Amino acid sequence: MSETIITVEHLSKSYLIEHSPEAQGHKRYAALRDVIGQNAANFARKALATVRGRGTSPAHEIEEFWALKDVNFEVCRGEVLGIIGRNGAGKSTLLKILSRITDPTEGRITLRGRVASLLEVGTGFHPELTGRENIYLNGAVLGMTRAEIRRKFDEIVAFAGVEKFLDTPVKRYSSGMYMRLAFAVAAHLEPEILVVDEVLAVGDAEFQKKCLGKIDEVSRQEGRTVLLVSHNMAAVAELANRALLLDAGSVAVNGSVAEAVSTYLSRGARKATYTHPPNPCISSPHIARAEILTSDPNAVHRFGEPLEIRFWISHPTPMINGSFCFQIFNSQFQIPVICSSYYQSTTFGYQSGSTVLMCRFPSILLNIGQFHLCTWLQEQPSGDTYENLDGICAFEVIRVDDNQIGGWRPQICTYHEHHAWTVVDATSDLGIDQGALASPVAAGDAE
Image (tube, rainbow, N blue to C red; front, side, top):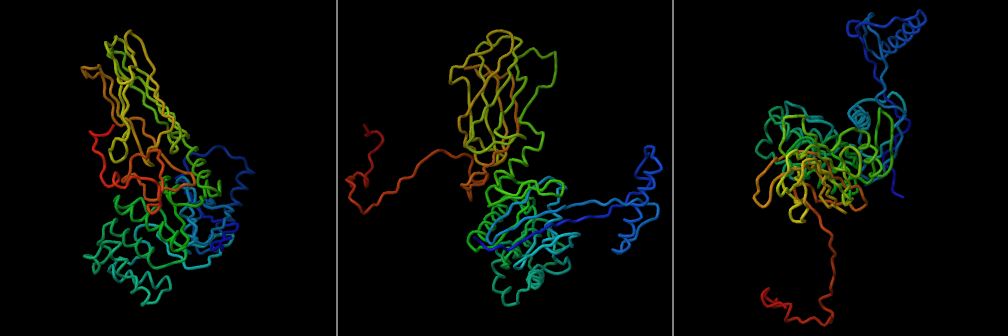
């Protein structure tokens, strides 16, 4: 079994929140026992705040808020742990404690190695120092010698792409430059544990691609441990070996990426639907409603699962030779899929009324990422269009199986296809006509 490098035991973190009487508005009627109990609780919390060196106003009420409550987990060396959860779930608080930026209220953490953190833009950088000086400063904080930093210096600068601004104070950097340099420093200075919070939220597509590749490299090839917080489920599914789902400061799931992502995505109300605004004056054919039946709730579909799309067509006036077509667009505005009822002789709309068209994909292999629909309702073969809708029914495709697809990100690939590879030993005697292999038959000569 792999060596455990992080152990978190019964970890809790609380904060004291002041509420002024003005901010509370009108209060409900309170019994005498409630007032006595509330005042006693406030007295205890104010005393605790005083002990911690925090002053409070006598008129303010104090609430104790638990950002984390009884969190337990372990991480092995070389593992990539994805930490997911909604805003306010406690993800950033957990990373700050692991990075020793703040202390826990209860519990303990055991770290067996140096920790490099990338929590937000500019963390650990001094704004008055240059990029060059901040590289050496961060290395010193990690306990590295000047010789060790110098050995990695060129790689850091090349990765960040800030050569021209290396001797410029970082306070003049854009947020993208800040993040590129910060990630380059954290990833290249060889910490045993790399803590990354929403690194994919800042920067262009090329930088995000480099970050994903570097995270994969440091974990799989160099055996370092990575804690990755992200709202990008595709990135978590691609990189992480295991996932931790936090909900209101507690661990909801500590297990496989598939289980954590499915639980996280199911806790929402987003649907891949479109509904035409009510308008009784419209008499021409139009799409009254569209819906994508995804494999998971919250408009999320798993790679390779069956997908069904339904369209409710309203045609108060009959159509002559009605036809319906839709395209599936990705976030790069590429079109991996186009389907038309015209080429399958699907007839509808000859009489006044409504029609439901259903298109089913037995196993759709859209690459991971965000998608939406573009539709046309028209006459064929004339092409006269009744209605064209663009950008409806947004949904997301994720892949959370055991076969990670490193490198196949949305900006690189739009669609996969079932295929099989055959390996042939070219030195063996397989009875293949080598002359035929050397001189392929022209298409027009094939039988």
